Image (cartoon, rainbow, N blue to C red):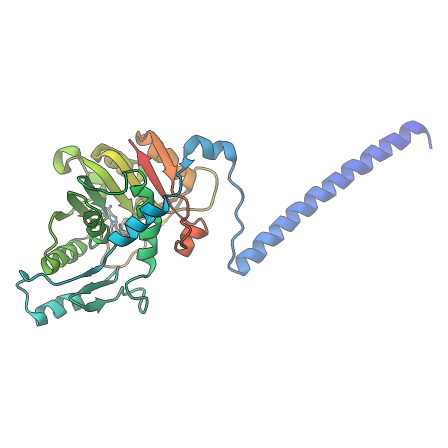
Length: 321
Ligand SMILES: C[S@@+](CC[C@H](N)C(=O)[O-])C[C@H]1O[C@@H](n2cnc3c(N)ncnc32)[C@H](O)[C@@H]1O
C-alpha cells in the first residue's frame, strides 16, 4: 500500500474510534441517568462554572457558635398565656378545626403537623430552620435584635414566631389565605406572644406605602408557587431594606429556567393558578434583575438538612440590597 493511502486509512480509523467512544459515552450517560431515575437516585450535571459565578456566590458556612445560638432560640413549645380568655373546651375545638402545617405544643399539649404525623416537634421544619437561620444570623451578627421582619406567605406564623424569638423588634406576617391568618392570630391569642401582626394579603400587593420597609424579609416556600415571580420579587425588593431570605423548590438545571405547572396546594393554603418552579440560576437572575446587589446560596448545613435540600431540589438564598 502506498504511504499516502496508509496515512489516510490511519486518520480515518482514528476518527472512527473517536466517534465510537463519543457515542459510547453518551449511551453510558443515558443508561446511568435512566438507572438512577429508576432507583430513585439523582445524577445531576455539574453546573457551568461561569454561569454560576456570574449569578450568585456561595455563603460561608455559619460558625459553630452561631449554629448553637440559633438552636438555643428555636421553640414551637409555648405555655398558654394566663391572659387567654378561651375555655379549655374552646381551645380544643379550635385546635382541632385547623390543618397544621407545623407541629406545636401549647400548654403541654402536642399538636402534630397533619402531613408529618409521628415526627413530634423536630421534623422537617426544625431541620429547615437549622439550614436557613444560622445562615441568616451569620449576616446579622448572630441575632435579629432590633430588626423589623416581614414574613411573606407566612402560613400560620411559624417563621414569624422564630423571628421574634431571635430578637426581632417587630414582625409582620402577610399571608394569602384568611384561614391561615386566623390560625396565626389564634396562636397569638393562645400564647400571648406580642410584637407580631398578621394580615391577609397578596405577595403581589406588597408596598412600601401600605406595609412599610423591613430590615429582613422572609420569602420562604413561596416563590415556586407564584405565576408572576418577577412581579412578586419587585414587591419584595421594594419592601426590603437589608436582606431577603428566599427559600424555594428548584429544578435541577444549571441554566436559568422555570418549569411551568399547576399550583397544587393543601386547601387551607392560598393557591395560585400556575406555579413557575425556577432553577437556582433563575432565582439568582430574577433577584438580581429586580435590584438585589448580591445573591448568595446557603450551603447545606453539616447537621443534615431535609433530603430535598441535600439532593439539590430545594435551595435557600440570601439576597442583599
Ligand atoms: C408552602 S407554604 C410556605 C409557608 C412558610 N413560608 C414556610 O416556608 O414554611 C406557602 C404559603 O404561601 C401562601 N401563599 C401562596 N401564594 C400566595 C400569594 N400570592 N400571596 C400571599 N401568600 C401566598 C400559602 O397560602 C401558604 O401559606
